[in-house]
Image (tube, rainbow, N blue to C red; front, side, top):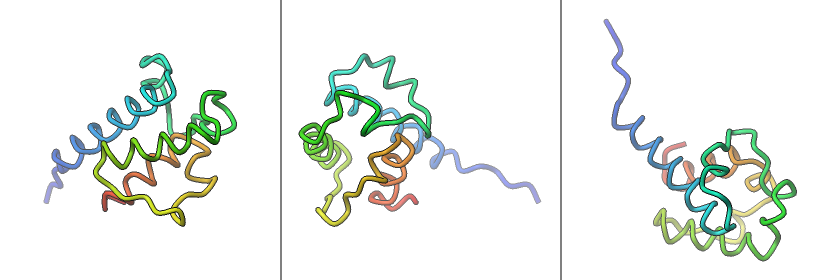
Length: 98
């Protein structure tokens, strides 16, 4: 029996990554190409001078708006903001795709 990858899941994952990278670029004022180049281990908080404590609030608010999720204060920790992969995993979990 051959397993066929779920194209819908792959398309949804690609769309989520594009949206999250665009969101980061918009909120932080980064060049879209810089954000598009993020890999899972790309550093965010503590690595990007644009992502300071004030920008975190804007980033999380924009994630709520664009992704249609609710982020509670208890959901936020340093690990989720440390790397792009951490933020992506957080978004996946909030969307029920983890």
